[in-house]
Image 1 (cartoon, rainbow, N blue to C red):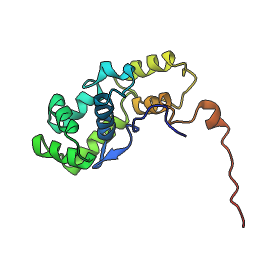
Image 2: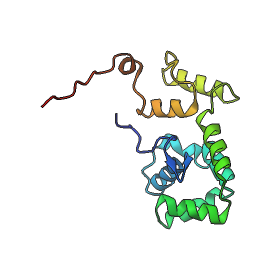
Image 3: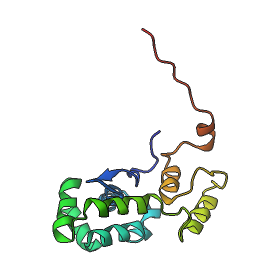
Image 4: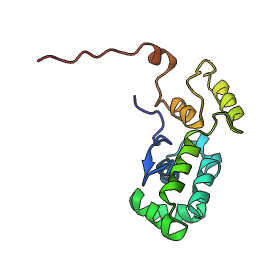
Length: 157
């Protein structure tokens, strides 16, 4: 399944961290005027803000660094040098915190509201913010696709 929005899933990791690559994608696309307008309002807010706070860097400084170019890992290394490099335990806690946002916490109501706005109230499989983002952007199978998986029979030749 191909995503309708040219952004990585928040579940994809860069340097062992969820979400960081997606934030870089948004910054890069915005710099090229290629980020869909409905993403503009939350640039540097929400998960972006949580991510830069976790790394101890300023969002505007990160944007400047991304605009200078470099690989995801080079930019993450810059964050580690400019802010802080989380320990393996800190990274684990970050990943688990982010992965479960919206499931039985203060963000749950927002996930329910966003599902309703997107016409996904029947999607009981979507319980977290990451799952909603992936479904909304076309990375999770629809309810119909999920309930009618295509069986692929291996070619015996």
